[in-house]
Amino acid sequence: MPKERTKMEKRDAQTIMREFTVRRTRQISAIAAAVFLVLLFAVLYKRPDLFGEFSKDTLFLAQVLLILAFLNFTAFNWLCPSCKKYLGSDMNRRVCKQCGARLR
Ligand SMILES: [Zn+2]
Image 1 (cartoon, rainbow, N blue to C red):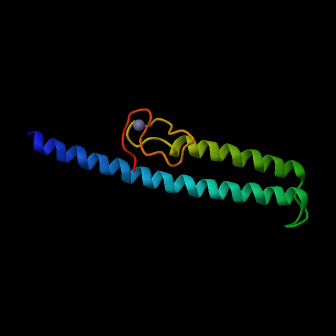
Image 2 (image 1 turned 180 degrees about the vertical axis):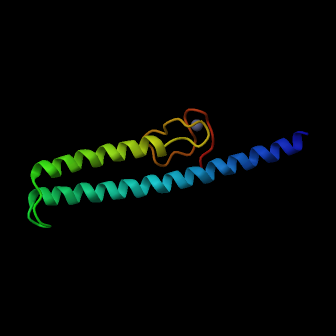
Image 3 (image 1 turned 90 degrees about the vertical axis):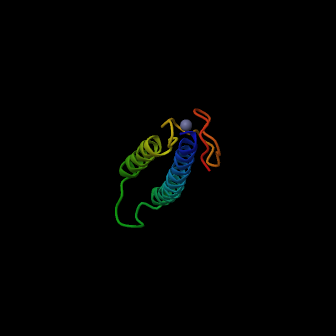
């Protein structure tokens, strides 16, 4: 039944686009949070007495952990909903360069 097949492919395409929107929103939130925290740590590094005592070693470690956490999150989140491959650095991508699925 070719008619029903087309219908199902269309629904799949919509599911992919919907999931991409969710992943993109999560990614943008994560970038915003990471930038905010990096800036906050940078301020604390200059003024370690601002919110109590933070040693520069602690702040450096926190910075490294933050970046690692962000990279980990990106590795799990920023994937094509269709082929699960990494989407690359272009946030406004419309088509997956690996499998050609329409993303939005
Ligand atoms: Zn793909």
